[in-house]
Amino acid sequence: MKTLVIIPSRLSATRLPGKPLLKVNGLSIISHVFKRAERANIGEVVVATEDQEIFDDVKKNGGQAIMTKNSHKTGTDRIYEAFLKFDNSKIDFVMNLQGDEPLMNINDIKKLNNQMIKNNCKLGTLASKILEKELYEDESVVKVTTKDSLTNSNFPEAVDFFRKTSDQDKKIYKHLGIYCYHKETLEKFISYEQSYNEIKHRLEQCRALDNNIKINVALAKSSPIGVDTEEDFLAIKKIMEYKSK
Picture (cartoon, one colour):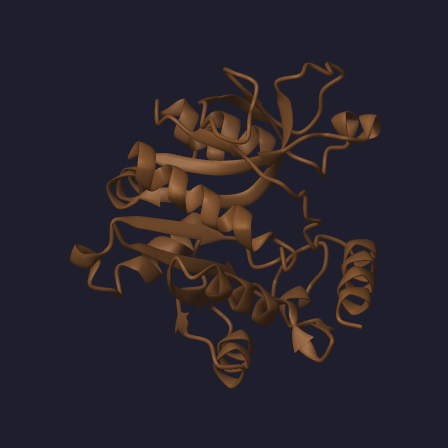
């Protein structure tokens, strides 16, 4: 079974414009992400972008990048365009790793890939335990609820994804920005229009559930911060600079 890792990235993020090229320890966020993906060693890694500056930065730092159209509504649309530029007869799974999560745990990336192969699932993702109660009501932290409580070895189905809840059920977890698609599921996903719940909650994964595509969830060991705001960037910068000492 062969996996292709595609990292969608663009400069025009609304909350923190230019974030993929912000530097930590002399290296851009996007280059930290692709180097982490390469270290997971699960397959070929490519950055898909509409911006020449990101393309040049990735190439300069030894990575592979592909230019894509600037009209994509979602990151998944972008990775599908990139996927079509490869010989997909030799690819079984496509992993969508978010370009703004430079602290994603390498073993968690491997775990998701292994679970997809072992269970031959259509679509999989990661979630971590919620340790701070205030996160349940924090709309910037996406939540997922699962059919069974997550363990280190199981891979249960997701029931729903949402941004805010007052419920603190044991089967509600923090969703992490990583997906692994069976290639046929990716093709099917892209063929559907954006769904009502996807638009309402601003969550792509709702499109899968709204069209009866099952999403399996593996428990992640760590719960990395994504870079959405200036505060996030400063927090990640502090962690990464400390780790590099």
